[in-house]
Length: 214
View 1 (cartoon, helix red, strand yellow):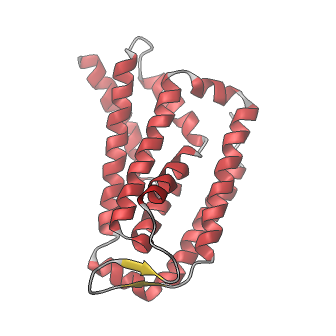
View 2 (cartoon, rainbow, N blue to C red):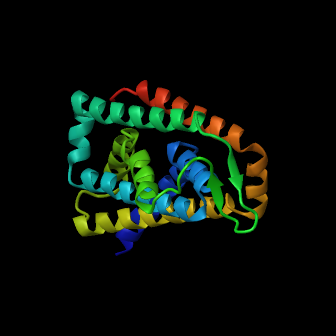
């Protein structure tokens, strides 16, 4: 049991740096919070956590190694990710002004319709799942930190802990981005924030397009 705890702590020490690093996931949650509100951003956070478990699962089951060694599969996942990032980036650039309703504290956007829970979850899931860099990240840390003799059930429990911490981190981001002060600031600069987030998503898509399989 002590060995398993050491493995988990080692994984979390590495994973903590990945959690706080700016990237598509953080940009997605921040935009969800300021455009669609706290609830949708939290749902998006769960989508990101669910996608992380997909990465953990195929890594544990050996599929991560297969993808990392297959140029075809790597490029398939990569270009799906590039297309998705460019899509949400262009959509953000074309978005209209967002107004914050002071009476209710809700974020409403005209002429957009309110985002469904399923769409919020899918947005987070897709942003994380369509990131081929995650293949190499989890393959590398699991292969270097986790013993080959560690039971699969224990390895999956590591993944659940990592996903839980990831969800909690982004829930914190969601709460911070929906405080009254942040909402007021967003009302004054909503269109510029949309444009900036759009540029970020497009830049991430272009960066991902240049990634090559190791």
